[in-house]
Every structure is written in structure tokens, then in C-alpha cells.
Amino acid sequence: MEAYRKQPHPPIDILEGNVLDSRLPELCEFYEGLGCPFLSRHPAWLRVLQRGLHHRPVCLVAGEQTSAPLAAILPLCLVKSRLFGAFLVGLPYLNLGGPLGAATLSGHLIDGAADLADRWNVRYLELRHEEPVSHPALTVTVQSKVHMRLPLPESRDALWQSFSPKVRNQIRKAEKLGLQVHWGRHEQLGEFYRVFARNMRDLGTPVFPKALFGAILDEFPQAEIIVVRYHNRTLAGGLLLHGSGVTEIPSASSLRPWNWTNANMLLYWSALSRTIERGQQMFDFGRSTIDSPTYRFKKQWGAVPYPAHWQYYVRQGKVGEMRPDSPRFRALIQIWRRLPVWLTRWIGPWIVRGIP
Image (cartoon, rainbow, N blue to C red; front, side, top):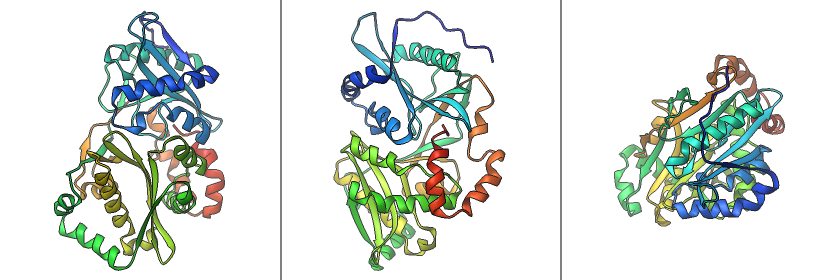
């Protein structure tokens, strides 16, 4: 595909390597000054993704004029492997991305990202926008998923009363069985990851490395882990990110053979209660395909869909070739489900590092 022809724009600085490391505190201060409610938009994710997934982080920054103070940023990661090729993503693992700051500079930053995509010869640039951005380089938009979010009342009681009788009964059953909820950080990581890795194997999906979650906990004191135990056996676990008004749960899993205990229901009820206790206004369940099982699961809690527009500057191939539901992966998914968990924990992180 012929490279996109960019228009003249104010100078953009491309920060990477030691320069990015030295200016990361400035980027974090800029983010905090914006009052963004989502912790997943924090620039420190660049360091997390470098440590946890070995991606190459880069951040495009711009001012309103030459030598002007920082006004907008665009954090990106180069995702590269021999198996899948190279991609420029804002940002992998997370649900949200794209330019942050002055909207008037968004187009200039995307120009810079498209230029970088050309220079690094990636297959495509992927920007995980919530609302669509009009830009001539972004010729493909995928809207197959939505963000499922729940605006929260002021009290646990009000939230409880909003649930259907079925949801309340499932939570009560878990409590009557004696399931116990535990909160922590690094000390709960092993328990959480054992459940997470088994569930990913059952889904036929390569698992993220344990080091990714360790890096998240190291970087963000606002992150914590919840686990649900039954007779000292961990049945469910999740990672929560508490931002400035919004709590996100980017990763959560439960053991399917133990679904009869309703451990997953108790996990989410406890997570929602925790979020209200912290004074948050919204709980973000993550993205789902409309009318899928996960969409219906989140909807039963009262979550409503918010738009997700993933936009692409495509240089090689097609966007859909890398989606998990692509026909090219169906046979591999079935094979993966039959592998022992220990093997998927060994080779899964190597594979998933190359998937945008």
C-alpha cells in the first residue's frame, strides 16, 4: 500500500529509549493534570508494557507552538515477532488508547504515528479510540466491540437493590457455601495467575506472562488483586485498576468446573462493593462483542455499552487476520485447549507478545 502523504504540522518530538525514561515523570504529571478518570490511559503503561511484554515503547509529544509547553501526547508500542510481523499499537493489552490532551493536536500526532509506521515498516498502526477520530490515514474502523460500564450509585445497598432476583440469589449461594474473598497485591499474584492461566488455556488463548501483572502492581499502587477461595482452593481472581473516578477490571478469571459455586458472581459483587467504598463513580467491565456471553454476563449487573472505535492505518495485509475469531486460528484454538496448563504457561507468553 502506498504510504499516507502527511500535511505540514508543528514539530512533534518522538520520545524513546533513555529520553523517554528521563521524560516519563513529565508525561505522568501531564496526565494527572488532565484529570483523566481511566488509569489505563496513564503514560506509565509504556514502562509496564516494556517490562511485562518486551514491547518497544515510544511516545509522540507536541505543544501548541514550537518550544511551547506540552499540550498533547500519543503513547505507542512497537509489537514485533517473527511469527506475526510488526505492529504499532496504542496500546496493547489495554482497551483505550490514542491521543491524549489538546484535541487540536490529535491530527498532528496521528500524522507522526503514521510516519513512524512507515519508517518502521509495520503491518498497521492501531489506535484504540472510544470516539472516532477523523483522519485521512485511518481508513479502517472496527466497531465489533463495546465498552461495558456501570455508573455506580452512592451505596452498596442501592446497587444490591438494582440487581435482579437471580443475581442476588447467586451471590447469596456463594456466601452460604462459605466462599471467602481476599484482597491483596503481590502476595495474591500467584493465586490469581494460576486461575488466569488455566482459564486462558480452556478458552484456547495464549496467556499473558506473569511478569506483566507483576509490573502492573509495581508501577501502580492503585492496582490490587482479588481472589475467591473455597476450602483453601482459589476458584476465581481478578485485577482491579482504581483510577480517578473509574475502576477497571482488565483481567479476571474463574475455574469452569467450579461454576456451581458462583465464585465469579461473588468476585464481581465484591469488586463492585469495593469500588463504591472507594468513592468511584463508574465500574468498567471491559470490552465485549454485542450479544456475546460475556456481554450478557456484564449486562446482568446493569452495565451499559459505550462505543469503541479501533482505527487503523493499514500498510500490509488485513486487520481481521490477527483477530482471535479469524478462521486461520480456529484449528489452533482447539489444539491449544488440549495442551497441559504448564506447557501453555511456558510457550503462551512468547506467542502473546507478538499479538497486537
